[in-house]
Image (cartoon, helix red, strand yellow):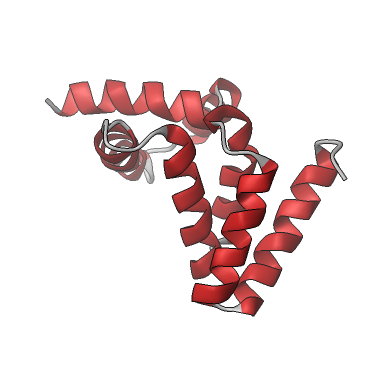
Length: 126
């Protein structure tokens, strides 16, 4: 059963984050973090993201809101980049940032907006 969750997790992870990103992460895996990588692949990707209850776009926006609210800047950036694969639009991200400002605070939203703007600038969007 764990192998099924791992396989499903890798499929979902690759579809959300992109094949190149996951391949780089897998190539950097060492004995020190191998168990952790398996845990997040099975748990986050194979058990939660793979569930039928919410679509990828909705899950993507939820993760962006949570990462922004919690101040997890690297994960936030990764999930904003992943919107190109999840169907969440730039306008969706803008709306999420307003929700973050109201419910998690303006400083959290301000930081998250800065990160989003940097990513969009790199990707050639104003």
